Image (cartoon, rainbow, N blue to C red):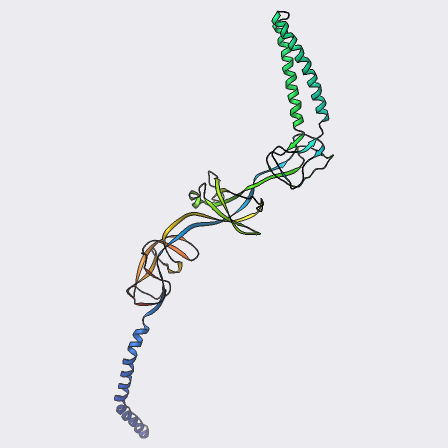
Length: 352
């Protein structure tokens, strides 16, 4: 026991003798490391300098290409196809004869009606002269004149029926595939061919309800279709007068030139609409925004220290957002260190 106490006493004496030197060493070390600690406390951040820029308010949607005019040709009357003048896939002009149905019975009826009409007209002419001389009564002449008018109506009726045996192009365009042959019996339910006018071509699409008031006649639309690399431009020319209550969208129709015929009806299109263009818009990176209870804020660096600014936002794109109020051109807005900084905290901007 005495030996343990002796050893403890020796250790205590040595410690007391060495303390002044050890205390001085730690004191010097703390003094030398104080500037480094203060230097390490300044947070290094990256920032963005706010400046005016031109920004477009764009929306993206999809649509379907439609022919300017599109019809499936059929016959008004039934009968045997006598002649086919159409060529599949060919361009035709309005009024071109495409199909002729056998009309021999109607032609015979027309000739008979014309013979009767000629005879009645001759009799009416003679009776008119007799009426002027008092040779017949007015009643007799009126009966003959009425017969002439009835026969003229009969001729017109037969000619109208003959017209229905001729299928003509209702407008200029391109024919599709034909589904009849010479000698086929066709009726109003028979499918003959299609006719489409694809220059210009139409595009049907819809926009969300909140953008309905911003889409006007004349709004430009850029679009892409599969298989064609170039960007094409269309122009809105009509829209529905009401919102679709099921989809909460507005149906819109645009029109684009298609002189080379590359755009085909039924194709799927990706569209981009420019609703408005804003000059000198103050844009900041979206990552700079910090949510708060009453809105959003950004941190601005002034004189090396951080200042929070509450902001009002506007348009947004993939990487940036418009600031309507809260910052000025030339302000330096933080993009990193947003969770570490506090108001009045000094920072060092290392990358702009």
